[in-house]
Image (cartoon, rainbow, N blue to C red):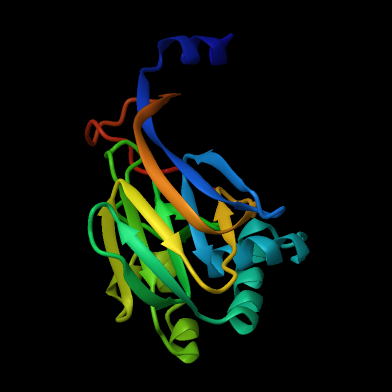
Length: 210
């Protein structure tokens, strides 16, 4: 009864939703919706490796273990990235995250400034860093300082096109359904969420996690 009362009395807030068109595992064009993060490159490989991780130590360790394996095996990819109406840019990149929420991957703070109701994607590109700097800066994926790392770039936008001449795996809200090429577009206020009123301001604080 208490839970039902809370549901009935809590305010309803609309949050943004991402729509992604991609190539599925059968090689066919497919689409999905996501509420948190779509990533490609290392993130897609992590989504694949995490299924093999020891679960006895919990999800955070599983994602950390999968990240270590993926970094050592996967490597950087050449990714062509077009954000909104800007010219396409080719990156040699470990990973690109298209974020609606702040966290993914068992607590990785991939988009520190993201809010799920602010009307834009927050895009984090982990660029052409040497391997030793990937390992030395892993803590910044958890402490909110990822954009302070040289070689990491941040952007905002509402439409992202991504392609590569190499096979690049996708991670969409924790699942790995296919590969690039992909087109991601933001649908503002598409999903109503029941949530407590936030005394710090009108926007949600990005606490969506996968």
